Image (tube, rainbow, N blue to C red):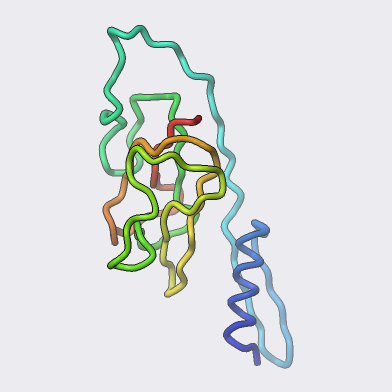
Length: 152
């Protein structure tokens, strides 16, 4: 029988290595952990916009997380899993990030809870937070936009 801490460590290892899944059997107990599939991000070069045609930053798109963005130069951090989105580590704490904050590659942006496990979602580029799509404690889907980041 596996200890809870051992299972948690296996989950962390699968998540950090981006392995698709892991299945092990020991002492008559079988554990299967499915990781999130690797997501490819395609970035395009920003298109210069004359100042008279510039869109305000707040017009990134609707808050449904899946609408087309007005600004092609933004980078989107998406949910790697289905779960519940939380902006802070606990209800009394300040959010990890707010619109206008500078963020670094590897910095925690939020938590997505799935099956009572709190999964920290990290930024994958340096930049500035432009928009937070979901509301706090809102359910999110795999691949749904969580944050818009203007690359540094």
